[in-house]
Length: 203
Image (cartoon, rainbow, N blue to C red; front, side, top):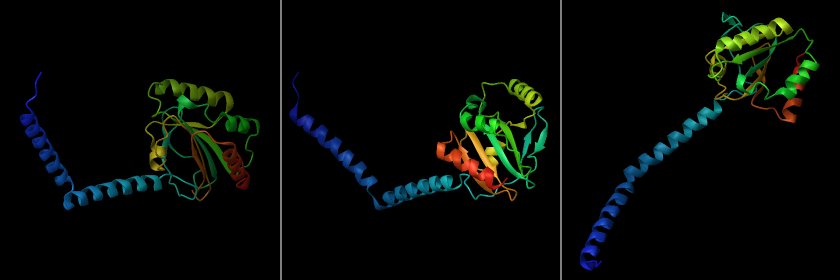
C-alpha cells in the first residue's frame, strides 16, 4: 500500500489543529477557574462528610426503633443511664466476638449501665426480617438478653455513623447522651481495652 505523503501531512495537521483548539478551550482562564472551583467544592463535601461522622464527644438524640415483635419503641433508659449498644449487621454478627464473649463471661453488673443490642436489618437484605426476628425472640426468651431491631438504618442515619454495612458497631453513651466510645467494625486489642475502661469509668 502506498501513502500520499502530502494528504497524510494535511490530515495530521488538521488533526493537531483540532487538538490544539480543544486544548486552548480547556486552558481558557474561565474554564480553569470553573474546574478549580468544582474540585474545591468536591473536596469540601468530602471533608464535611468525614467531619459529620459520629465520634467521641458528640451528642446524640433519642430515636425510635422496633422491638422483637416489630412494635415501635424508643431507646430504653435514654438519658437515665449510660448505654452500651451493640449494633451488628446480621451477616457479620461474629465480627466482634472477642469482646462480646468477654462481656458474656464478665457481665456488666452496674445499675448505672444498660447494655442491649439493635440488629441492623436494613443491611442484611438476603435475611428475611421475619426470620431474624424469630431468632431474636428465641435468644431473648432463652437468655433474657435485651435485643431490638432497626429496619431502615434509623440509628446509623440519625447518629451520622456513615456506612455501617457489613460492620458490627459498638457505641457507649453516657447519661448526658454524649458518645464516650464508638467503633464501626472489628475492635483492635487497644480499642477493646479502651471500651472496658469506659465501662469501668461509668459503672
